[in-house]
Amino acid sequence: MKKPQRDITLRFLAEPQDVNFGGKVHGGAVMRWIDLAAYACAAGWSGHYCVTAYAGGIRFVTPIHVGSLVEVEAKVIYTGKSSMHIALEVNACDPKSLNRRLTTHCIVIMVAVDAHSHPIYVPAWVPESEEDIQQNETARKLMEMRKKIGEEMQIFVE
Image (cartoon, rainbow, N blue to C red; front, side, top):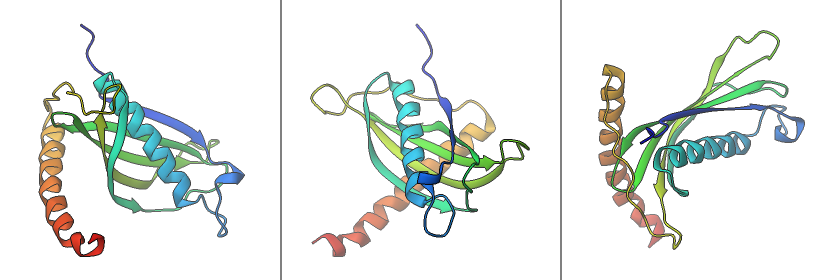
């Protein structure tokens, strides 16, 4: 049996329609690229259609300029029964120089679903390297923090 694909890199050129009024790539365009990469990563791991359940901790570190080559790297760092935590990093550079710089990073949780949109089991991911183990432990810590944040946020949804 073929091993599931754990990571993927998508590449885009930042186009004029991606730019906001300030002349930089709009955060929404970056978030769209993140969602596309998270989906491709999760689908590659699970072998199923996946939906976004959570996107958080998004940090816009430096702006992206029109004409930049943008790379969105996504990798599985934790799996639940049907969910996959995907760590994403966005880097950009002038395509002539290829001096990459970090622009954005975040975590997205994707859920694999069947033809009736019901959650479906995904293959378990087992960390192997020291870096994998650290990222897996961080994903577990973030799960606990999100539970607390969710409880606090209830005041806004009731």
